[in-house]
Length: 517
Image 1 (tube, rainbow, N blue to C red):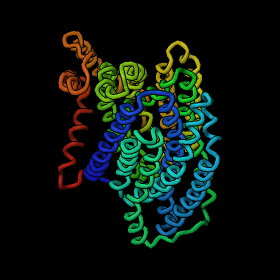
Image 2: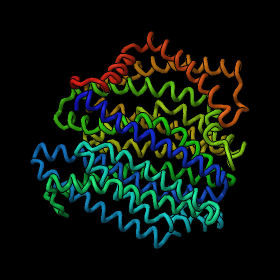
Image 3: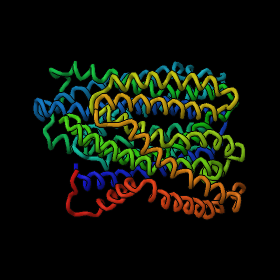
Image 4: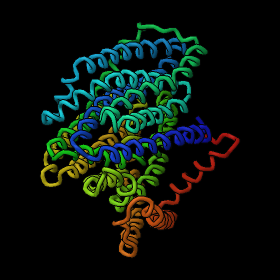
């Protein structure tokens, strides 16, 4: 994929990603406004995690395994064999998904008991899981469609599924909050998940029909593909263990803290979802092809170029979100039943999530690079170490720092994960240099000190901490703009190569002639 094609595909995905993330923030705003941060919302967050974990594991498994597997099988045995293998693997994943969804719907008491909450919250969680169980099934099939469509370079419709899911959830809250309470949000989750399937189904049928795909359950190399999938599935499950452990520890705090932590995590993940995921979605098949064809020098150059771009974006985003954690929470969440306590308890962990933004960007990208080369075992080992470190720090920090400690523990775990990925990638790509990566990111972090200083200085001159709603938007926007301007000035001195790369990527959006890869 050329730089132009990549940039254009990334733009399409970015637009849908931005809208989806905006709707995700609106969903949390509506949840906070209608329900606040209470034991009832804790039960909803716990129940939604069950659905989202299932969907996240399946999507990660399919994208990570199916695309590189298809590329390598097509290179060795032809396109027909590649489609047969991919479809057989996806068919079995679909069968397993149906079984899991049915179990959650019939026995919701089992997953509800995992959280160890009091009887009242456990009862609400059980009821909500029963209502959301079909969503687990629908999201599983949506993940299947996404993986198969992305193989054919169809990124737009799969990128829009988040919009459908969030719109359905919001509709459920708006319609049902006064009549059926929190169950309205649960029904919204199920409707949104069904909308994901319906959105992708027409294009899926057309693409599969155009390529005359033969649906099958067997393939000569299905067993080998299954063995590749097992460590990926295990790694994905382990990654979700941290989400569960955060909720488990937060459930030991007073009611509403689980919800506050979830609000903070959502706010902290917004730049990642809006900027990183759209970029990596079209990039992943291109990197997988470079790896499959053993074009190591090109792959190494691509890795260092992308890490520079990611750092250029992540450093100021994370720094300014940390400086303005309270104002960000106040602007987005501070309305309705999300009162001053709700805002304060959300802003505390948001500070640490924001500081970890650069680590998250780089860790996710290196994960994608290793996955593109079918290095699932290495990813699994790194994940095991990360989960262990994170849970250990969860236990150490929750006492003195409450939910903020859980966010800090997550940041520490991501740092460990990034270091391990870097060591593994150095083994696979001899040209990849950890010292070069460290110097590159060190320069960008040094640039990030400037907007922090400017932001703190502006806070002393123009205090916006007490402002709410629309009154906060303009002054906060002005302060952020001034801090970003200072960042760009310093980056021209300390990170000119990364700024040029960013400029070239933007120019590629309007070029008619493809640029070289």
